[in-house]
Amino acid sequence: MTSAVQLKGGQLLPLIRGETEYTKLQRFLQQQAQPDNFEERLKIANDFRDLANEKLAKQELSNATFFVSVALHYVDFTAEEYSKQDSEQKRLVNQVVIPVLSQLCQTLSKAGNPKQAVVAASLGLDRLGALQNREEIDHLDSELHLNRAVANGSIREFDAARQDAEYVLGLFPNHERAIRIAKNCPIAIRLERGARDYRWMGPLDEDFKYDDEGKALKWQAIFAVLTVAVLVVAMVIARVFPGS
Image 1 (cartoon, one colour):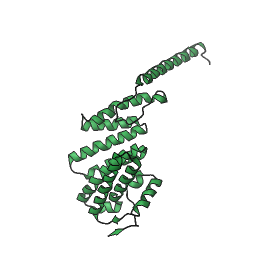
Image 2 (cartoon, rainbow, N blue to C red):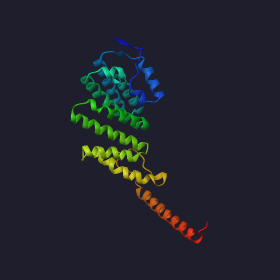
Image 3 (tube, helix red, strand yellow):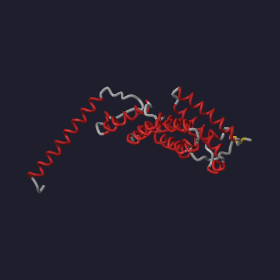
C-alpha cells in the first residue's frame, strides 16, 4: 500500500537540511510513492543512494546532495516508528542510514554546506551503536570522522578536524587519509594566524599544494619580529614615561 501525498516527518533530515532545502525535498517526495513496507523502504533508499553516487561521480554536486537526501528520507523513520522496531530491524535500518549520512556529509561538504555536513556525520556517529559487526562499525566510524574532519576544515575548525583524524589513527594507525589530515591540520592552524591570502584553502584530505608556503611562513616570521619589536618599544616607553 502506498501514498503519493502523505509524508511523515523523520528524525534526521529536518536537523540537517535547512528549511528551504527541506521544503524542496518535500515537494519532490509528495510526487513519489511512500511505501509502508519496511523492506521496500530500504530498497528505495538504496536505489536513490546509487543514483546519488552516479551524480557525485559526474561532479553534479547539487543533484548528488538532493538524491542522497531523498535516500535518507525513506529510512528516516519517525521517533515512534523507530522505537517500535526490534534490534534486528534497527540494525538493518542503520546499515543503510549510517552510510547514507556519511555520503550526505561528503556531498554537502563538497557542495558548500559544511555546517550541515558536520551535523550529518555527527548523527551517523550517534547511530553506530545499533550495528553489531565490529569491522563494519570501525569502517563507518573512521569514514564518518574523516568526512566530518574535512567539513570542519571548510568552516576553519581545524582543531576539531585534527581531533577527528587523530581518533581514526587510534583505530587505524596507517590510514593514509587520516595521516594526511592530521599532517595538514597543524599547517592550517599555523597559516590561520597569518595573512588571509596565505591561509589554508581546499580540503584537508588533499596534499598541501601551496607553492608559496615559504611566502606564508616568511610573512609570519616578519609578523612575529614586528610583534616583538612593538612590545620592546612599549616597554621602553613605559620606562621612559612611567606616568603615561
